[in-house]
Length: 402
Image (cartoon, rainbow, N blue to C red; front, side, top):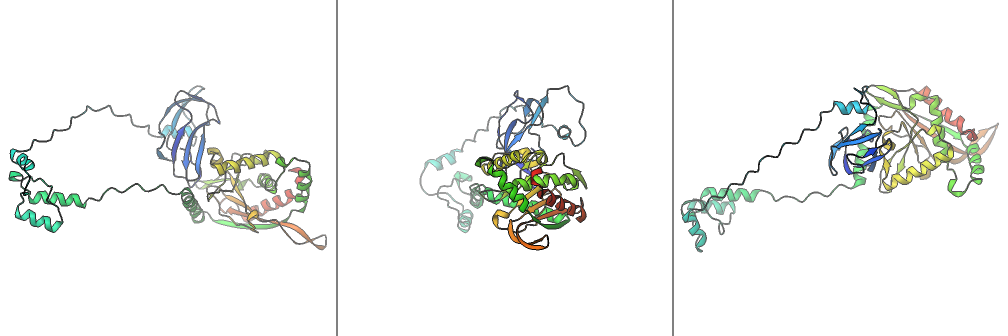
């Protein structure tokens, strides 16, 4: 069961798309898992054959539980370096072998009633009750009408009344509680992650105001050349500038794990996406620094569509090395976000607003954008954060190079 973020503790297997004996290649979708963020497609990262599955559809299991075993196509290796997923799986205790079927034990036949008891059951009329039992039944609210006693001649005894009273006290089974609303569950999951972030991460915050008149003018001219379906949004430029700026300040691109910084294997930008039912997710745009703007725009639109229909892949939720959030469409001028652990930084963009700006010795109305950085002081400091924001500003002044 993969971890799809620091806030995930368990997931429910919905279905297997591959089965024992099926061949798989890296990138194949082999299962669907339900989490607080929705139904997530689980990818496989090895070529080989599914040897066995260890979790059935409908089962909820903790993160790290072995879901299936895949036999690779290459020669068997004696082991893996520490931290490799296969090494972790090898160290886990294998599932216990199923117990052999025990011989069926025939249920004991009920004891035959005594002649007196049988006679009492067959003869209608007054129920035989000892005086003590009758008084106790009245005190405990036990109805003696249809009881059959265990005493002499089927008389109802004190013990019979006490057993009946105990049965009355046993509460009736309650109907199962309805499943929690997904948006409520997601809100609780986000709350837990953000509480952990503020509790454990020493945040520092920086902001800068950027004149993006050059970028918007270039974007206008570029979109005039494109069909409507391929036009670029400012969000694509902003994500690309963040990705390129991270090349200059790599200590903002990665994770804080086990007391130290671990650089990301690539620049995978998590783009915060609000969901129609409430809550948000931040799936990754993989290797965003290497994508041209057309490809980046197309992948961003695809991520938004699949996030809102619940068809994201596990790697898209597990791989982000930094998160970008843009609340400009909501009219927000600036946003100082909370870092999503174990990431070490979050970049925020606000609304593009026309404001007075001093340039070349005169005051002009210019479209301005506030860019903010929330960063983990254990992994970087304010000086390096400032270098990063300056790099974003510089890149936006030469949009044709993006």
